[in-house]
Image (cartoon, rainbow, N blue to C red; front, side):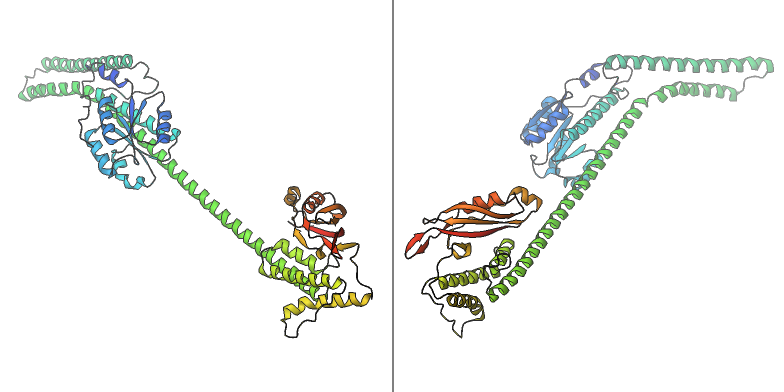
Length: 494
């Protein structure tokens, strides 16, 4: 930044004989020069200074200095993000060129420690942590304007003006001067009367005693004159420190306000930190609960998987409906659809169901499992072989397709899972819906009938809607596609 001459401060004037021009200049329109390109900070500063001063923004350091000289501003704000680097040298340069400038600094909280010395010695009047609100900046602007007025009143020898008496500063100043003169005149008159009375009494007593004046008396009389003049000057001296004392009191009040603002800022930062830590703890707790729930669902799915394996080994593939390998597999899929063990068992059960379906067709016989087949394959094929042998020996005539078959014996072309009703999901309800339907020769699902539902009136609509959009491979008899009636149980678990 190019060095520029700062406007000179008003020279100290006699408290009694000073002209009212400085007081009028102090009440001239005020300007706050802001070195910032942050629109939010400039808007907050404008709101904070509304009715007291106008805000002039400067995009660069050179423009900032030009406006300080042109407006003779006593208050300025520097945005650390827009100031040249190094920031401390720039602030020191501004202070050297404009020693009476009240400087506000806006930046992150880390600047509090970096500029602690400048804040203590008054080089920086206040530090506003970004983002700064208009309310907080208003406190800083009010304190700066109060400090500026106190310095002006101190320079012209007036007591620091309060907010109630600033409406008519010239009249108040004249009244204060008149009262000061009258007080000094009365004190001086009283002192002169006392000295005259004392001298008269002394001269009156000398003729009565007949004592001649001695050199010591003459010296005492001569010494009395300096004492009298010092006594006359003493009252004037006692009244002189009134303005500096008031200015010191105003500075002390300003420092107390600054300390209160800094304490409030520290308390707010500590409160924000506590809130942030609480949110992190809540997020960690929620993640732990989610993982615990997921682990519990996986464990329950494996329990259902063990029951399904037992039912597969015993040959209960799809019946009974509530205690079969297929029902337990559906429960495991609802809890852990992506589990590898559940997916593997689903493939094994599907293979077993296909073998059982082929065994029911006319002229089809189940091939015996090889002796060297793995244990899993044997477990999967043995129930199907047993079921095929039982059905083959039950009747000597060719097997026919039953009137109503389980849905598991059909081949799905496109199955649409039902959508969980939101109300039931919020209440944590679970249940089942038993449906009968017809697979048309085209594979479409028609004639859907609700056989049972638990609980009633909750899941029926979602089950029917999902099944009506599903598609199956047509059932063929003697190479001709026919309509086939089937039944299915849809489970709903949250």
